[in-house]
Amino acid sequence: MLNEREVISRIIKGDFRAFELLVKEYEKLVFFVTNRIVQDLQDKEDICQEVFIKVHHSLPKFKFESKLSTWIARIAYLTAIDYTKKYKNQRQNDSPENLDNYYFTNETPEQVLTKKNISEYINQLIAQMPLAYRTVLTLYHLNEFSVQEIEQITGTPEGTIKSNLFRARKLLKEKIEKDTKNEPL
Amino acid sequence: MKELNDEEIQRLLEGDLRLSGDSLSADEQTSLGQYQLLFEKLKEEPKEGLPYNFASKVKARLQAQINRKKDIQFYLVSLVVLATGFAAFYKLLAFVNTDASNQLFAVAFKFKWIVILGAILFLGILFGDQKLVKEKIIKN
Image (cartoon, rainbow over all chains, first blue to last red; front, side, top):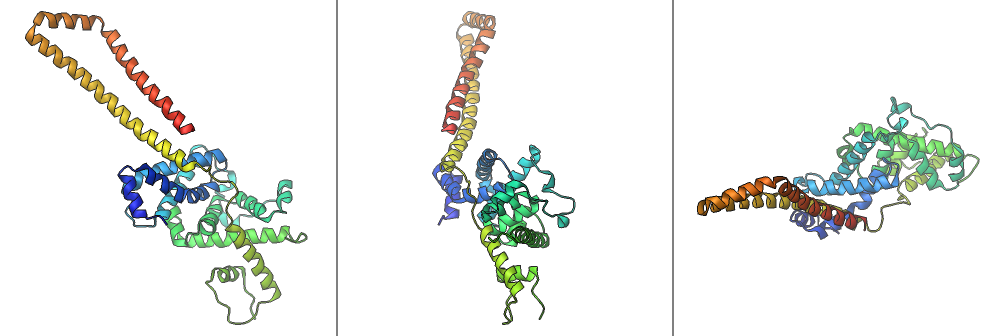
């Protein structure tokens, strides 16, 4: 287990080996956060690199008021969001006008093919969802952040996070249920 | 008995809701099973990821960035030291031998563009060389 205080103090003193340790510890977290916001794999790697460079520059300002993982995840989230805005990489359904009325559209032949592989199918369904749903599902289930931590990371109110999480899971469950009615998993 | 709705089933799986002892109906069990499967799948890590040498790539990029800043500072300081040195030498020469200092000034003035271009070229080569070396480090 990484001793965060010691590693941070070494990094601030200019120890690059300590910085490499920090990157190794949190690279998965940063990748998971950016993975569902940005589409292109090469862009994802570039953004992850940028996130860690920002982390290095901002470390002297980190006052341990939150967990280091939450702080790094916030930098990753904001960097990925900035990137999509900067390069107009946002898809049309990323921010629908009425999030509560979002539903899946009809499936494409590609989705029918991948339905055999339930994990891949769920990932495809998540990829179609609006940004708020994708983000909350990833941060809560994959990164295992609490609702309060997700609030710190995204700046979204706790109530909205809970409702998005519930609705995203319900939509996925209903879609899978519908699609696999005659096709047991 | 009132059936559990989606919200209650989700809360049940997260441990926020406890059943009072009554067994679940067939529909509830089906729904619970579907949510259980979904929760498991949502925890699965994506197949693709970052390259194995990602950490060393970031380290190299950061080192290159920091070194470049230091290099630029060094070049600027060198330029200032060089200019100050030349001015000091000229002053000293003017104090010892006014004619020689006037001649030096005249020559320097005559070839001012060559001197300036030479300085720019020298700094440019140093800067370009550093940049090429660092780009190679990042690519590797």
